[in-house]
Length: 297
Image (cartoon, rainbow, N blue to C red; front, side, top):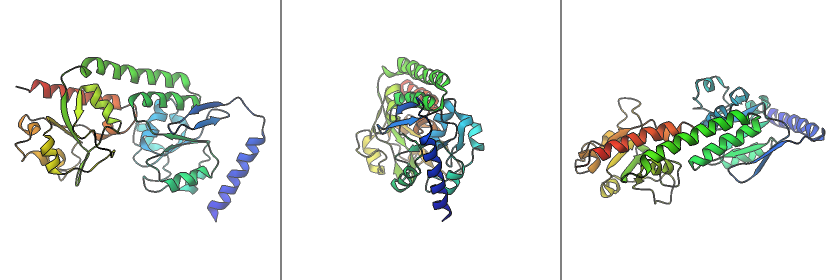
């Protein structure tokens, strides 16, 4: 009942705003191919995924982010932003109470039911789904346009592009290395070339042994990994003593990656979260791949 009253009140406020003299506004196309328009720069933005929080801060809109989801932990200032829910549930009453004028939504991370509820609020929605490095850069620029922070966003997007270009120039043309990326070990999950991590592999001159699989995050068995016999295995950092991660492969001495000691750990957030820190994660990946090349007979 409370939610319905708040929804009606918000609708009335939006209708009143719509009756005001029209402003030139700013329009951009989001990652769903939809046009998003704001009459004036957004001042109260809610980020509905951790990568979105990073993109908004990178675009110069950190002070305009009034709500975020759990795991929105970067930059440090993001940890003080009020939470409006978790990766499984959005607190709509709390979200409405924050009076946002822009919602940035993760299309594949927020459920269809959640997205439909958000659409009913009548607040401009920007769908964020970067699948390539270039889309990360343009996301920063497009969000900067909506936030009224275009100059800072352009500088940050430029720095990201320059970092990636330098890595490509240094590593992309080197001898290819076959890599297995392990997301999780219980069960074993990996990522295919449908994920943005494929750009990181290409930048470093690496080849994903499971890149051709049709599912973005497929589950694979031990035998499948043994059959592929990757030269390098990459996994996340060890969070606690019980986290085996890529150490699970040590007993399999017939694996090329094990024989050559090419088991590397990189913080998964730096490689899988589609934000500006992908440049840092890719740099670490390239260094590991280069080390694997040096270890060839």
